Length: 234
Image (cartoon, rainbow, N blue to C red; front, top):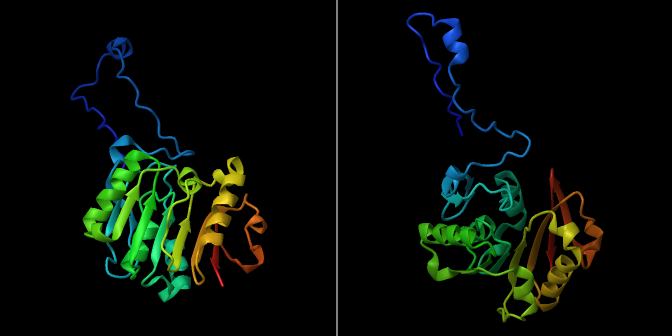
């Protein structure tokens, strides 16, 4: 995003020094915080930074609020992930936890998944997700629930008996601040899933992947700073 700086005023004649020193200055703009990269509110809903990699909707851009807590999986990581998953997503039910923009679930839909359920607790983000679904014209195959993923699971939802593809890409901090809840959620879904179901978990290097259920069966890939685990139930 280009940063627009105010044009420096040009004087046809040099001003009097005393006049310059005594003239009240304009209020200074808030400096850009390069460390936190906090996005401007003007960026909310912009079509930039998140796109469908392949399939029916290849190249289509998704609306993204720019908020750090949404943090969609980077395009390069998503491309590598779906290269590994390959045709295994075709015809399956997709469960996208902590869905954010819906980039993972909608990528799967683009590549032939039958249907998708998106869980996104932040209501403005859930509204943008619905816009993304409508923009692609797949309302009949997708459902958005504005609900906390942990609470939703504790309520004992009914899910299809056919194989699933589950994406779990929460805020990285959840693996520290809500580690017990995260492991119960992932382990509980694995227990309920039918054979051939696929699970994809994204964390960062602070999370000890050996804590995952059936940890020896996970295919762990490193895409700094992300760590992605892939598991298929047998």
